[in-house]
Length: 223
Image 1 (cartoon, helix red, strand yellow):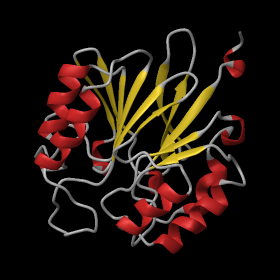
Image 2 (cartoon, helix red, strand yellow; image 1 turned 180 degrees about the horizontal axis):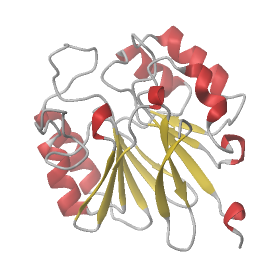
Image 3 (cartoon, rainbow, N blue to C red; image 1 turned 135 degrees about the vertical axis):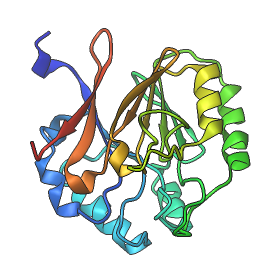
């Protein structure tokens, strides 16, 4: 199979209203689907997200999405109505299983969808009960603690300890996150490959190639 024939999915997050850049994603119309990690609008309203989905549907109609910390809980309800929600859900696709957890830990900005470590622990405990039978991807808006993916510019780690412990124990093949824009990059927790996509508003996204050995790649349309 030629590389261009390998099925793939697009992952993006921290879009922050930059909807006009969707067309810049390489071959998005050929992707099997698109996964959104959260923070879709500038202020997180249902109206913004509907606008985004209308635009994205012009390029790809298979979408799974969840709220980030900017997005209101009305957005979560919208995703439920459209049957594309990942937040607190397990979605089994043909080739892999998605586990979704949106929002973020508390921030200094008091954004709309912020949760405690205890909340994360509760959700992740339900995920941990699921027997791992196929390629599994944890889609988390908030990155796990003390990795290359949760570090602020000044060096502080602001990720979730509950996420870190879940990844150590459950060992999904991939964890795809965002939230901390400057921490775009990758790390490894045991056998789990962790990727912070960076913010789509700056031209960053990810691609999962479903080859015999699945490969995740951090991408950019500004380079």
